[in-house]
Length: 320
Ligand SMILES: Cc1cc2nc3c(=O)[nH]c(=O)nc-3n(C[C@H](O)[C@H](O)[C@H](O)COP(=O)(O)OP(=O)(O)OC[C@H]3O[C@@H](n4cnc5c(N)ncnc54)[C@H](O)[C@@H]3O)c2cc1C
Picture 1: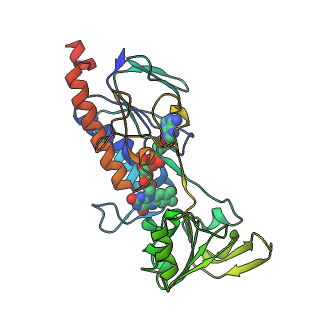
Picture 2: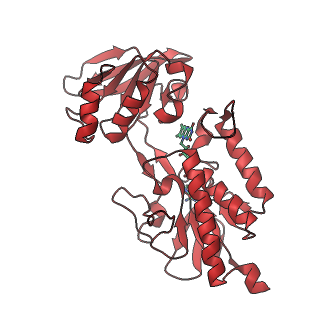
Picture 3: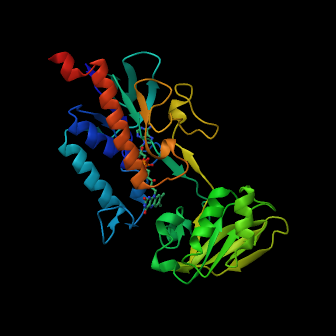
């Protein structure tokens, strides 16, 4: 039996694609993942409150939001399998998707394997994750924890610059901890950083430990040259040291950009392989939000439905 559509990944992109494909009667098969590239439910399973997903005026916890999306996908007939995909073969058609215990052939694939925010694994990081330490300023910056407080951002690229500038809306002072003596951020971004009265840049600075009492209160910073250690009293520590797209599985099978993100064509979610689409953070290094992941999941399902219908390669059509 050949599946109509396989969706790989169960973050906001994967479940949204499943909801739309299910409602289009494609009976999608979703490999939710197990431990590769995160957990079933995706990155929001690792956060507490999500305050910016439309429809939840009072906010909603990340795990609860993902539970609701999962239920909605099930309601529309998605077949969910909690396994990691370990191999794909897009060179033959129907495509082959192999998970740990199951191998299927499919007329179409939507890749929604997301990305993993890089972490520093410093002392105290697990204790203060979501209680002062975060990998997303846009998601967490407006939290009362950081309002009128001092915070730190780690990184030297455009993301770090953007996050530092964004946080000045809430924090009284933003300390930018930069490992080297220069920034990788664009010239324009650098100028904005240097000119901002609330931003202080600390060169050769690496955070090595986090301390506090229930919430973060202080970060221990090491000078990379002199090796001396100093204390920085801050309520927030934001990692802006990059993300790793979960695309190792697709290397050699599909076009990836220089950083490993899946390349999609123009405004669509189409990849360079006909019949394979990509949605969410796996193809987006810029917005990286639950709502944009869900939006592109929707786009991918609509594009898949139209493409499959035109080819009349649907299982339920072939059976008719
Ligand atoms: C701590 C934190 C807090 C955040 N807070 C917010 C917020 O408040 N608001 C907001 O809009 N955004 C927030 N974000 C960003 C948001 O979580 C992401 O933009 C969004 O989850 C991306 O969705 P996605 O579906 O593309 O991928 P992900 O959520 O990354 O999900 C990827 C999925 O793919 C699966 N997978 C990976 N590899 C495989 C494989 N080989 N086989 C099968 N499955 C696989 C994983 O199990 C997972 O289910 C936050 C991110 C983090 C890390």
